[in-house]
Image 1 (cartoon, one colour):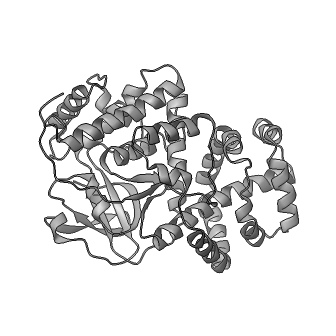
Image 2: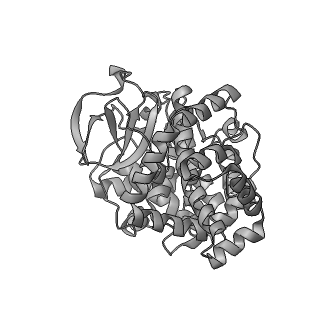
Image 3: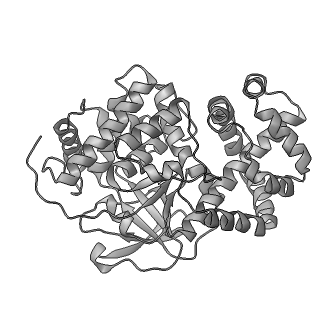
Length: 399
């Protein structure tokens, strides 16, 4: 490996990444070269960039403080990321206090009537997107979700399901016992019968997916954490009062994330792909923090030079590369816009960012929203970790 020098320490506590996003990485590797989900390689690229460039990330906590020992590919990659020092071990064990969990649950209860109206609006507004997402979830996630968590229906959400879906708790408890059977879930996945049991399971899984996003958001607010939600959950979250902040992802960072993903696809077996992906991330993180001069993620370059720098960085740390890998996965994704990727932070409060972390800012349009675009001195995504608590999402911005 190359020469290195001391690099400024920018490590702070970041927060959480949605386990559903990690699931998307697994699915993308599992079904390659087929499309893995409605989000294609966009979510794996987002996850890879965050894990490469930001320290102290843990999995968003579940509805219980007890340790959930996952099995299957999701459990495997979680343990690989922890072993590689990429994910925080404490968050896997789930160290959120019982008080914080109780307060988050109480907040969901308090706003249940409003959530019910929002849920109905969501169903009416996005029927095709919901159908596409749920079709993927049933086919690709239901069985493994049941294996990992023991059920498709989260017992902690049964009171909210009853109020929002207008069903009795007794009926939901009966349904929960049914969906605790792996054979019953496999039957649902295979046959998709037009029965009350299947249709209510469908509703509970969809609503539970959205409620988990709210739950993570409330916990992050209380714990002054940042949280990177899965994009499907984002659409159901309430707007924050503070002005959004936008961060460029340098072209080098963008290309390198694609190379890290594509290199892992050299492996034939899923477990080997996941292990290589985690190890690739570890290699880049380690070399970058040691300040190896070949690992230059912070300079904003024109596309051709950025591609060369990304390939050089990968070779330096022993990652197998091919010149076309820097953009192969991005080109396979219809919604991807190369050289226009970035991150948006929606702060939970109006806490100001220290002037030492940006040179200047300007307002930009992100759809119908206006954000303040941050130009960091380094252009380095770990600056996200020195920003206020809030939600982080992947966006396309005009550079």
